[in-house]
Image (cartoon, rainbow, N blue to C red; front, side):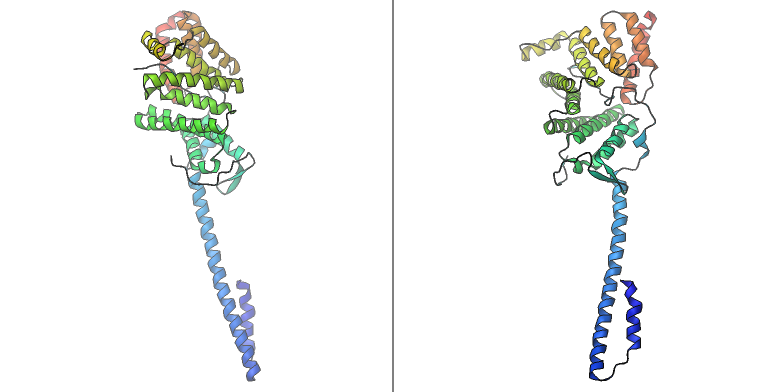
Length: 359
């Protein structure tokens, strides 16, 4: 409104008022002048408020998308399975959040989000998260922060919740690798709840079933023997459901292989405990586990360190040591990227020290 000022000023200085009519005109003009001055002050205040709001929006966007943005486009190649390469589950072995209130609207792939002042689609947002999953531990933490800071926008979206479960699980493994056992436990349970919500939102989402299985299997260190056995059945049920929905995902076959291998390796005492709970306790063989791992490798040849490790371990159980060493050396040749790879490499070192002469 500032462009009115010169015009009104000229009126105020150029009018000479004579008589009663002139006085009336003068008073009306004076009143108009005061009104315009008030409007000018209001306009100035509104402009200042708009500038302040714009500044605050920029700060909020920075907080929502974290301080590290280089992790969106990781330069590290994936060394594991298809889109879920960091799955580490112990289904049977070793037996001894307040949500913000929002309008619950499903976010479609064309729904737009704001990233540092730039509108992006939900699909682009998920693509950024998925790229972080394939990177370093720092990249995986970026994925977690992105999802954590945008959870109110995807309250009833299964695609969001299985990713959030995956990110939470991955960060739990990172925390565990750093010795933060209690933080790992908290995040593992949180990941399971997120995956369960994803399954409830969409029972036909293969990734939701897969990550529910993974997170349920990861509870083994924190539950009783009875609950661990129950979780093992739930794990197998959801992995088989994931395979039926998406048989071309190598990680699904790897995870079923882990279940088979874990059951095969049960001790006599553990089998007796399972028999006490179920008329038909779980059973599997090294051959069945090997078939699953080989199928995972067929779908993603020679790129998954952990899967190659388990192929070698199956051959060891079958006493085919030369084949075992061949696969163990393939696994050893792959780079160490994340926490799971670090753990796999430590196990590889021990196995090659023991069986390497058979190669």
